[in-house]
Figure (cartoon, rainbow, N blue to C red):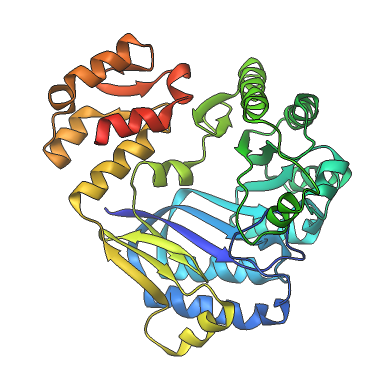
Length: 375
């Protein structure tokens, strides 16, 4: 039976973080009810009770900022429209300051079994600098509320490479997260996007980014620290305790199909990649039409090959050379014999059961490895 993942986007936030370039808005919260109606309309367009769904990821924006009853209504609609696997991973993103006991109980009763919470840093000074609306205390309280509701599979997002951030700040953050026994930790390097408040702050010399070597040092520290604490790096920025890798992300990195619902959501289904209208008002207007899709393209074999290499090498599972040969009719061991031999000799990749797997050293130069294999 064919299985897919589902991503649902809620583009509403209480406030916009200084570094955020995601499709989210802090001034359109009066549209939440109409947005949900449009979302249900879009879901109904794809309704297929025989389509097996093994992961659901509710992201944003801030899904935890939605009105009471919104998430349970959404999941009820998904359950009526698709065949949800009894063992499906169902994740919701949240910010610490919008977590309440009543909301988490609603999530739990609706079927959510994994929560991804955005901490970013345990330093209140850094949180204020990057425009986060919560404190370290809010985060600790949110973790307690989530656990009290019976949800124990918890991811925490952390940022490195922030202005004024020190390795000691990273240590304090990871110390807090590991002491609270989170099952999954994401450590993302800050990316400065155009048209964000942080970009303007940098251009006006209000703040400065740490030098590249310092940011790399933060990442190296995070890797060593989390490894010591029993977390395995299974993707460049993602660390998990055994058995708690994010199934939804793995589904995407392994080129699995997924449906995207909501304003600006992306999907990959029947070899077609598509994206919805980003603007909330435009998305809501689509409720009277037969499609919410703004752009779509069929993915050619060469593009799929390149993405399979790129995404696969970002994980500790690497790329299956037998699958590459079967799907794309490309024998990488033969066509890239010298390149692979050189990479192995340099200690960048290993060949394990005919899978090409990056080493710890290889993870530091992934872009170079990928380019050499697809060019």
